[in-house]
Image (spheres, rainbow over the protein chains, first blue to last red):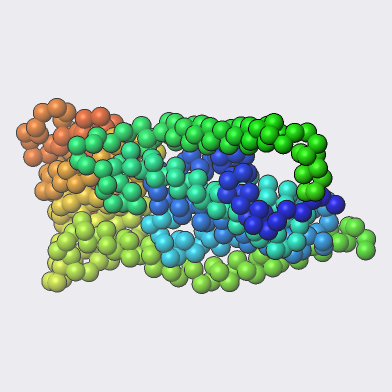
Length: 227
Length: 188
């Protein structure tokens, strides 16, 4: 039996510590392709989150009756069903958005964030935890896509969510809405997020050392044992 | 339980439930999607032929063609939807033509996958405005860097010459097809 983490931790790990884009670097194809504008990033993120949450809930509830030999096939059929529902609903209710996202909505079927969570988490945990995990991963995914889309839209076309915020004198950087802009922006965001994680880890490390120097060896061991 | 039977049962069960669910959603969304498409076409037709009041589809042409009428029963023109190759993929456009097929009344690009910021300028009004009242006889020509001097010339966009040329050649092909159709009596 592996150690159970707290429920809030189950949600938060997807947002920050194990963020699917910033840390696991999963599902990069739609990430790089659709984040030309903030609204595209947000819509793609929400669509993927919906599919992720629904499939995780369902798969985790029926995990005990799915024979391991056919689990991947079952996961894919379930994911594909939810993706098709999202696709049809978007085509019916938000035709413009559906046009802008093009083939990337149907391609959520093969998004490795989703299949990855089913295999690594939902098929081994109860529906409650699977729901929180999926919601966390989905939030992390949406957040990363929204940030990426906003930066590219602001610098590449002077607008955010279609509203102009940069002055006319600002010449839009064309490269930002072309494919290289996606790689540049993602690279810089990854660098920034790693910089902070490393800094945070080092600070924690140093605080333990300084604590040790202050209280001495015996007390520290005592403290750890109490914990 | 026998493993094989369980595998069959689970997969079949998932398949049936998925199929049923998708059929239900499709039943609901299909008319909405069709209505969206129709509204889109309709809006585009009346944008390229603003004086139009009603339209009808012309059948057996090999491409999308609509005869548009104003309040009087005389046809005021045709809206032709035509597509061809652009710089990176297909360009699909709708063009309003006068009833005698001599002039373009207006042009709109429906779908394109040109380079953002360069080729995509073909959708902007400064480019499509040039096609208003453009003569199409004997065919549309393009010039670059200078102002168009003849009534059948347009100016290609700097940095998007290939996309501009593609629009011109798609229009020329489409109009050519229309003329053939008229000569063979297909427009009657």
